[in-house]
Image (cartoon, rainbow, N blue to C red; front, side, top):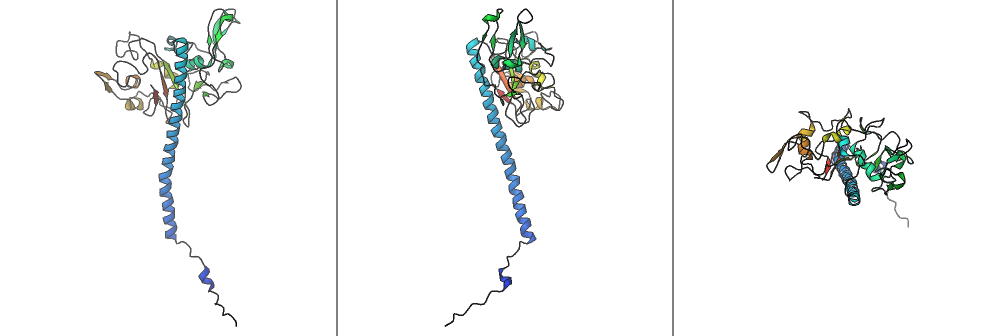
Length: 300
């Protein structure tokens, strides 16, 4: 007995129904909405990660500074603070050494004694960066080199090391020298600025809170070499500048800190004293890459 066969379905029944134009527009609209939500969120996560990495970098530098202080009862930098007041000295042919670079020389080495001229003379030696600082002595045979206090491998300093030479790309501003600096971890890295206090000085900065003739702990001139690039507005003290707007007048106890440098470098809760009293201040320009704006990372 033959089994009856089912008639083949009409070919038109196998065709898939195409999306209508309205359905396509709805799908595209949903994708656009999701992208508008996800892309900023991803960007914020990336910035937060870079902030965390930069804070970690600052913590490493701070730990190295404190270890140096334990050994020498002073914070690093072979060149005394007074040399960084305006005009800054010493001045190599390619630009003045900055206090930030001075900190690198103290932690990693590079400021060595040259005896070839017939008398001891301090000078920058590229090949010594990363070998550790030298304790100076008139007798070259009694000079002692300490191990570096922080890892100067590529990615920590700028520019990345090429053998033992840092080349001529160490300049990160118009007025600094080729001596490398420690960098933050943002998309466009900038140097982490180092300011070493004049220990025991009663003023926060020149002229505040006492007369201008009174010694000060910190001088804004020390970071000026990193604020002279023409395409940026670092530490912009103009009426419309972010520096005075992001760091406005504020009251600490009975003391009023004026907008700008007083508010920026003054202690957050103790009147009349600076951040990092008798120690140091470390500054990252933050995600916007501009010093003196509200996203700066300042320690302490």
